[in-house]
Image (cartoon, rainbow, N blue to C red):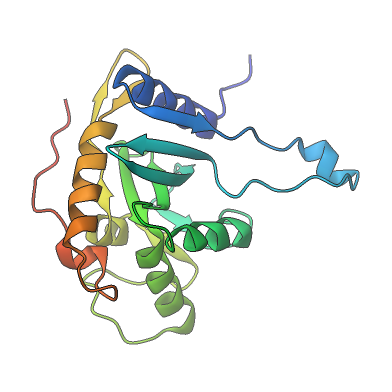
Length: 199
């Protein structure tokens, strides 16, 4: 029996967590890869899903990896996804970004706002001066950087699957969004000091 696709497992856990917490969640169906190979006129998905809470919309792209860093390569993070997440920042009460899952050695999940992701990507790829405490990798975004610039998602381990506390995540992100009076201020500047507790 083939091992389950861990990316799909992560997506299913996020979807079930939203359902259990009474949050509106919509998973955009993946395009059939065979249709793309055959040259059918099929549009690519802008991102994976939408989450809605407290009058705010969260367009999300989910990534799961066993390693300690997420490659910035097109094979992992598509330019199309970056483009549409960035476009979503133009609208009020819309908070777009990535949910990065690092599965080992311990499950760690971070929300990275698209603006903070793009800032890091530009610095990393062009080897620009920066103020990050952690090491910058030209070709990837390490877990240490995600911890520094992102918002960690609390979780509880069941027998096999995880429950992610998305209500808490949305609360933190909305609070940060309201504190961003300066449009050029980063989510990093108002990063919550609340500790993350895993059960």
